Length: 192
Ligand code: PRP
Image (tube, rainbow, N blue to C red; front, side):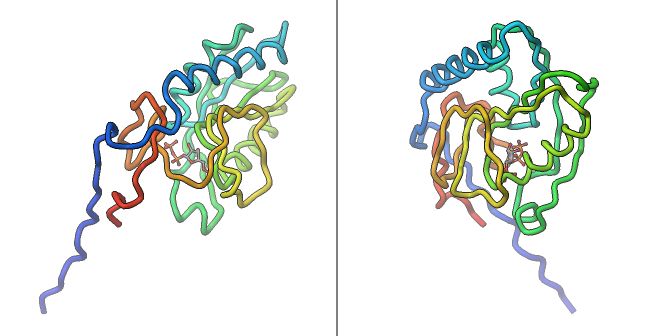
């Protein structure tokens, strides 16, 4: 008996230039500079370890690190990929841990987006087990409407409503991370 295969999922990749700009690269640079100044004042005379959450936070971290005038180093963690599975199960799995010890250090976890909060709640708990001197959170975007667990960032570049965005590190199916502005991804282009 012939079996029919399910149709392959069709993904549409409209050009980023067709998408509405939510925050221009100039607006982003302005906010990152302001956050860097605030962090530099808050940690005056101290050293900071920035921990970026791959992959989305890589671009924000690289800009933020250079906007901070106090001594800082960085490290990266990676967690299981985003999707319905995480939201329905609440499970987040660590794929890559930090490379260097953070005990006794001032740590800031750096995220591109704080959405349901599941990722940062998990990472905050994990990092606290390493006994840092202090632990804060910096995020480029905050979507408070979407929160499933109570967690807030200490440094936020922009708060946004529940809209799907790409650019400045954020992707749709791994594309658009290199787009310089943060743009609204058209919901109708999601072909599944
Ligand atoms: C995104 C983002 C955060 C997480 C936020 O990562 O970078 O890590 O989702 O969502 P939450 O608050 O609902 O947990 P994603 O899994 O898309 O991976 P990426 O960074 O590689 O794009």
